[in-house]
Image (cartoon, rainbow, N blue to C red):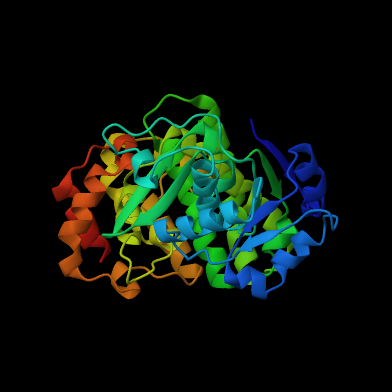
Length: 370
């Protein structure tokens, strides 16, 4: 069970939540940028001196198996008894993997959902508190951790037991996020809501949450990008991100199958949310025959005419946010497409795409996005 505290100043609850979980030697999982900006120190300053911190701030932009192993080794050597994840989806996903391996035996690859069979994840994971500093991934309320592995692969570890015990969602922590990262993470959340809404599973509560997320995100993303200190816009973006994280429980789709494949290209270090933004329009065009009138509901939630072209609306939104329109602008080249299509076709998230797609369909979608 997860307890989510939302609002400006909620980071100050950290001491109480650590005490409630009986954590006195936490490992802080974050990244160099947040350490340099003083955000990590800000969070640590809210707890008494009796709490003995160990910090791992080597989280890469896409968390890797190697980074998980480094953080896990530090957790064990320091005698830590819990984890605080501070940052976007990368530190939170990395922290989930460390919380798992701190209590359960096996290599991380053995827990991957595509392992045959994957090792069952039990309730025994290290207590984890998540403090998001971006409004995008929804990982703080999600059950998955996505970790890059050697060979340009993505491991997807999924279990309800990986959801953090406590979330401190403080919109003020996102106010210093640069415009480009605000745009990319915001479109990540938008994609979670759209794909969660369109997934073929029958789940009216998840659909309602997804539509509310789309409303909040579409109404506030431009303001958050242009006026980063606007806490009202930041609060709506963070709520939309949380709703996107909850929507993912209904399933994702082809956009994520493709972004997982492209995001695993180690030499490019591509941002997951920006990939989602670029890949969303072509996947929407492909899925249209299988979705029908549901696009109208998404458009209405965005304040658009139900008769508008959803993929064109997303393209225009991306352009207005200063995001790239094509994968080629991000460094993806045509020679990579066959391997990317192969990986996308077998990705876990492809199972809930509204329209079934195989390797050839994904190859054409990558080519269209290039």
